[in-house]
Image 1 (spheres, helix red, strand yellow):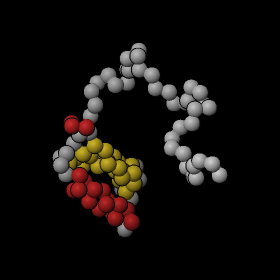
Image 2 (cartoon, helix red, strand yellow):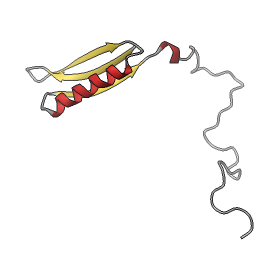
Image 3 (tube, helix red, strand yellow):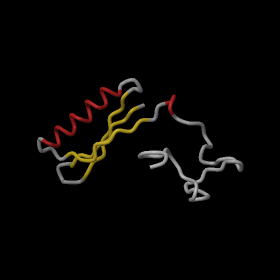
Length: 95
C-alpha cells in the first residue's frame, strides 16, 4: 500500500491529519496527488507536511532483521585505520 499524508488547518486553525491510500501499483497516481496538494498549498490553502510512505509486501524484509546473529560482524569504523578503503584516485605509480 502507498499512503499520502498531509495536514490541513481546520476553520478554527487546528491542524487536522489527512491521508489517501493507493494500491501498490499506483505510485504515479500517488505522486500526482501529492503534487496536487503541494499546488493547493502554493495557491494559498493551509496545507502542510505532504509526505508519501509505502509498505510494499514484496519489499518488506523478514521479521528479526534487527536482531542479528552472534556471528554477524559489521563495523562502522575500520579496525585498523592504516588499511586504506576504496579505490585509489589520482595518478598511480612512480612519479
